[in-house]
Each structure stands twice: as C-alpha cells, then as structure tokens.
Amino acid sequence: MSHIYIYSPSSAVRDKAAFKRGVARLKNLGHEVEVDEAALASHLRFAGDDATRLAAITRAAASGADVALISRGGYGLTRILPELPYKKIAKAVEKGTRFVGLSDFTALQCALLAKTGATTWAGPALGEDFGTEDAPDDIMEACFDDMVCGQGEGTGWQLPRSDLPALAARAQKPTEETPPLQVRNATLWGGNLSVLCSLVGTPWLPRVKGGILFLEDVNEHPYRVERQLTQLLHAGILGEQKAVLLGAFNRYQLSPHDRGFKLQTVVDWLRSKTQTPVLTGLPFGHVPTKVMLPVGQKVELLVQGRDALVFWG
Image (cartoon, rainbow, N blue to C red; front, side, top):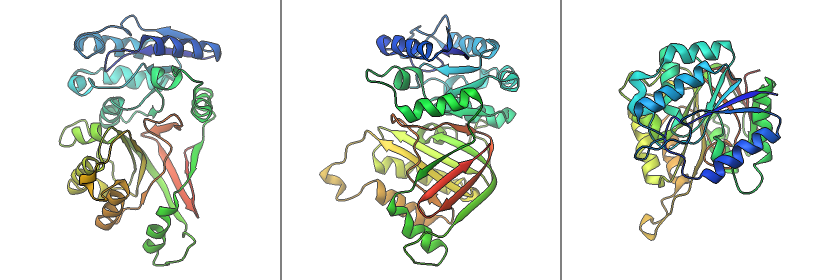
C-alpha cells in the first residue's frame, strides 16, 4: 500500500464527480489517499489564489507521501515559479516522494530541474486519468503501479511507419528496414510544448545539452505546434538534444483553409531543419494510454526497426 497525496497546484477542479471517482479508484487499488485541504478550492480560474496553491505545494512536499499527484493541469504554475519551495520539494524527492503530473505541471518540473536537478515524473492526473467515467486505461494504471512499486525500468512503443524513411535517410541507407539508433546517458526532460515554450528566456527552463526532449500538447492546431517548435529550434534548444520524442498532439480541428497542412507536415518540416532525430508515437499526452517518464533522469534510447525503447532502470 502506498500513500498518495492529492493536491491542486494549477486550475480549479470543476468536475467534482471525476475527482471523487479518482480518489475512490486509488483507494480500491489499495492506496492510502490523503486529500489536501485546498484541493477543491476555487479563485477565479485557479485552485485558490497564488498563496493558497503555494501552501498546497508546500504541504505536498511535507506530507511524506510516496506519491504527490496533481488533481488536474490547466494553468497557474508559471505565475508562482519565483516563490516555489524548491529546496523543500527537492528534499521530499530525496526522501522518496515522487511528484507526478502533466500539462501545466511541466512548469514545476522544468523549474525544479533547472534549480535543483531533482527528478519528477510525467504521468497521469487524478481527474483526467483515474476519474474517468469508464475504467481507467490498463496501460496507464500498470505504468503508474510500476512507478509506485519502484519496478519501472523503462518504456517502449512502436514507431509509426511514417518515421522509417527519415530514420533510414539519416543513416544514408534508404532501405525499408530502419537502421538502429542508440543514445546513451542522456537526460530525459520536456512535457507540454506550450508550457515549455513559455519558459524560454527565463531562469526556469533547464538548459539540457545532449538530452532527450519529449513533447506533447492538446487543443493546439498544427500551425501553432509548428510555431512553438520553431521557437525551440531558433533558440537552439532542439539542436542541443540527442533526440526529440513527440507524443500526442490532439483535440484540434483542421479546416479547408489548411489545404493539406497537418501534423505530419509539421513533423516533416521539423526534420528538414534539424539534425536531431525526431521520433513520433510516444504514448504520452492528453490521451488515456500514457506511460510514466522520469523527468531529469539519465536514460538510454534504443531504436531498432519500428521498436523504440527508453531505459532508466
């Protein structure tokens, strides 16, 4: 049984039913669930004013929990980055608390990595993943359980066939079989593309060189995704990485005005502008099936054929 602390560092919880379902499901899985006193607070669009959310983060760090899990993402962390209790969070991580989340949580993860080097986990949120009306995704639950039990050693996925020509061209072997790609001892980092781009030019963006950058986003049209990737490209961030892993980019609407401009157009364009390998299909983002990713940890990336593996065990 693990002690899971639920808190709300970003947007207010609007779907109270999903919140309650999430808590109940975690308890049914055998976990001890502790809910922060301000988890359901509301101020404007936030889960309490800035001071309230800072206090909630501080309580999460002091909870002694095995896992500190966000209730939801949304928006709110970037405005309180200067005041975050970095040393207390890092100390909690050192003692064994795993901070887990995604979306707006990317701001805290990046800032903590930049300031302390501490590792956090990109993974589910309470309401969106455990509080669904249908049963939570089996793979998401299994990956979360592995992380809680300390058994997670890596994750793997199958690359889309559209990745194969680019990988073959990189090795100057234009065959149907993808040449192997291996990256060793690289820091895994990243998260939500929009949030990460909002940190460019600030002290809260870690300058990871020779890393593996993973990205996802939601409700962003492909041209907006391209615009943000262009910012990372022109800032020199993409060129400093050993690989870029693209997860889910979903819940957007194409229009006749696009004239064939789509997400694959963006990926193809990005590959033409950088020497850094760009892989797609990473099962992470605002989708039911998501893996756990240790942000700030040294990992190894191995690609053979269509099989991509990230190891950190």
